[in-house]
Length: 485
Image (cartoon, rainbow, N blue to C red):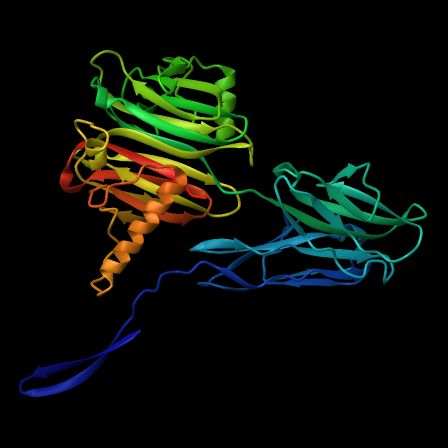
């Protein structure tokens, strides 16, 4: 609240009034400041879990047992009375408000039939995909046996106090329950949660652009694979489906054709996707929207490729012109031996908003990923001889809700604030971009060029990179997303 003094003069007399101005404060998402604590209790006793969170009121609470919602458990405290062995589980709470939501870390409840069998609640485990995960329970007594379950399903071969899982994958993540028995009678129970983390990685690019009959009007998406082995990819050239709801794009390319190249050699090509079940299954797996119909003239290629550099070209029939969407999807499961190291698309940028080069990309995993995003324009002409290269580009990155994250118009310049150290900031930015380019194998942008670039660390999620011409300029531009490691 801001207090402003206003002086009013009327008929020669004046008086001062204090005016209170209320400024609306943006809502803040919840933050868990005190998480529920794991504990050990005895049959018949009471266990209480409590969470403390901050954020704009009102805060809403919902408790979960082994990932399942608990009915009528919607306050900051969860009380479990008259405990049974079956209450041994992993409990967590989700706190939400108008600005967002957050989940607490898991808390384990171990229940003893008589005091002392389990002295410490087992800690939940986090393991990186491809490594070994060890789940263990400390119990006191003689002649004890152990029965393990995974998400309620018995693990027949797990009979000891510890469960070792070699080379874990994401399918091993979940809730593990263990019952301690003596003389074939259950005497205690516990539970713990296994989280399997995966490195963040690029998994797809989807770019909308104008396709025409000229050589520099071909919509080209490039990708580079990194690792040992082969990579499964899904490629799509979408035209007719864009004209249908919910997209309702006008002026689409009526009959796109997609061709996959490795160097100058054709790897695969398709003009009409045909509605095959292998395609529809792949669409579902990668989260791609369905095409309008099996008879639509959209194109798709499902291919396993060797490690290397590839380009996918979208063209139309002779003299055809229109808007198309080119998509490249990684169809492999989490933490594959071969990954997409960089993805890019070259297309014509128009002088109006609808002519922007728009590239959507997705980062998966459980960790953040550093990416180099470039809008290459002038250098396409000076370095690569492209006749109609866009003279000046601007690149901007948006989150899944369309909120702007960052933008850049000249890659050698930082966002100036008028300080005396602007030149030093510029030099640091140039060095960071050049170092990232070297690490990813990208060609260096010439100093002094009007290309654009952003180096940023992003959490897993869906993003959009948009390249436009400055001052409504038009021409061919290249949008690139590189994974920086």
